[in-house]
Length: 221
Image 1 (cartoon, one colour):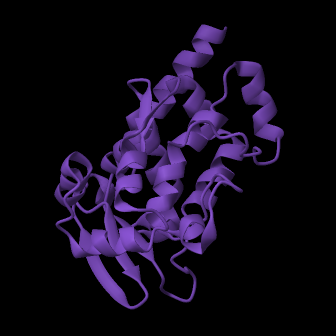
Image 2 (cartoon, helix red, strand yellow):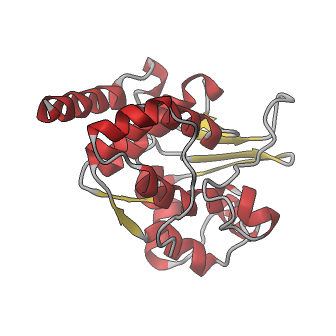
């Protein structure tokens, strides 16, 4: 029974990773479109890869994001490259549970697909996390690279404020660390690891439970 459940969840996760609107069926090349504080700038994946591999910052949007992140460039690079061991089925169980959907909604407060905004934000972020988790490892860099379409950080429409409250409450220090996009990315994989659901019984409990307590979060660095 448990094997059939695991297989079903795995299949559902795989389908959802591609079951997005046609506008999202493209290779993501602009994982961060900064649209906050009157500034509009797009940072492409190549610039992010260069920074993560060499430490060189070649993009002004990325430079600005780092300066407003609450961390040094070295800390951001270290945090993005750190990997966390996960179980794909356990991650899927969490992300498809009621608590997981609530988590994803909170985590896409102002960061979502460029064209559809919050309409497919849950599906978009969930598909990226699951895609990165398929090899049993996740990281900030991996999740960002797996986004199914361009994502925007928005302070616009009198609805979004450009803040991304980090998932590990009490672990950030100061406004920038607790609300900036790059800091949010640094914390995200550790929170996923901490909240993955280990067994079928736990999955049932999680479905009817309130949002999971985020502490303890293991090894952000």
